[in-house]
Image (tube, rainbow, N blue to C red; front, side, top):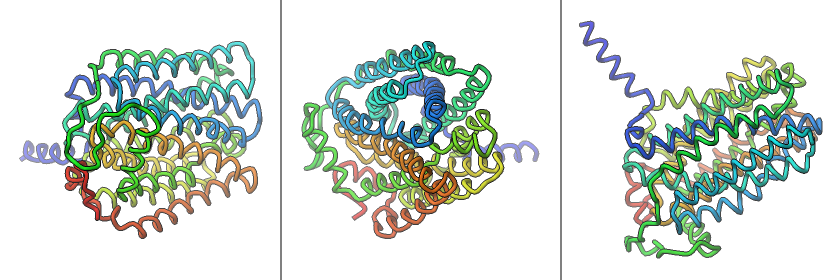
Amino acid sequence: MRVGTVSVRGARLRRVAIDVAPLRHRDFRRLFVGQGVSFVGYQLTAVAVAVQVYEISRSSFWVGMIGLVALVPLIVFGLWGGAVADAVDRRLLLLAASGLVWTVTLVLLLQALLGLASLALILALVGLQSAGVAVTSPVRNAIVPRLIPVRLVPAANTLNFTATNVGMVAGPLLAGVLIARFGGFAVAYAADAALFTVALYAALRLPPLPPLAAQPVGADRPPPHRAGLRSVVEGLRFIRGRPVLLMSFAVDVVAMVFAMPRALFPEVAATRFGGPAAVGWLYASIAIGAVVGGLLSGWIGRVRRQGLALVAAVVGWGLAVALSGLARSLWLAVLLLAVAGAADLVSAVFRQTILQVYAPDELRGRLQGVFTVVVAGGPRLGDLRAGATAALVGATASWVAGGVACAAIVIAVAAATPALLRYDATTTTDAARGSDPSG
């Protein structure tokens, strides 16, 4: 009886626990490890830059400006990088863009060691780093379906997002400790530079990934192309004709622009929660929830109504963020932001899975470029909105109102787009062949 009880419990745990089957594929495993390790360093730099900018300017407005400076390169190079990824060997492009990001980190380290304290220089480096990240992200995501079977794509995305969020926990917490104890930013930038070498090695060990020859499956499936504006437009046209894809992007934009409170973290940490030690917890809190949600994500691959689940997750994100803005205790704020983070992981997995499976391979780079612009650009616009609004009405009002607005707008968008609510994961094969099953 006891053995039977243990067996039943084990089976239940496997249904709930994160699916690690994609890690059995060597090339995906290398990419996963490289991305996961390097992202810890990337978060070290993200927090160090924000705190350094606040230390120089003493204003959340300039912290919010980091997002604006990063936005234009994200849009331009995200779209361009996705187009190039459909025309060249994706491994080589990943290596080149990763090299640029690594070089920028080294320059950030140098300016910190020299004590330059120049807002203009830091913002310029943020823009250059953003260009490199805008290329690496769509390329890396477009590679994933080439390394594993299609049925494992949701599990692979869950693993990637969970590892990313582990980095978003470890990086900010470590950054808070390093900045508080060492009184400077050079150590954080140096750690990032060291950790990023793992990503470079992982990209180097990937197999060649040249473009696949286009197959005449659907009338709207384009022939092989050269990277350029025309190829970008082809990708945008593909999205425009499919309400499921279009609205999945729209709800994410709403979620990040209205409900992302991170530009307020340095100010709130300093004025409400006691200073630099608290800022690390605030930056890590969303990711803590995402990690917990990822570890308990075995159910995600069994969800068929992925559009409905996406909407529910984004509404949950907005409401949890709004409540966290009212918290007067650091630990309550962290807990509520963690709930928001778990909801955000669920929405991210469904958005990425819908896109990767929906799109044919020869369009995958371009659509991942659009995805990168939305996913990375949305939070930066959110930083700008949060910082600018805080300057007018205060940090608490900016934080809470943004979360409430997010939930309300997403509910309205979903009500106006029944195709998204009806979207069924079992129809994605037909969708990828050029017909929109949502009607």
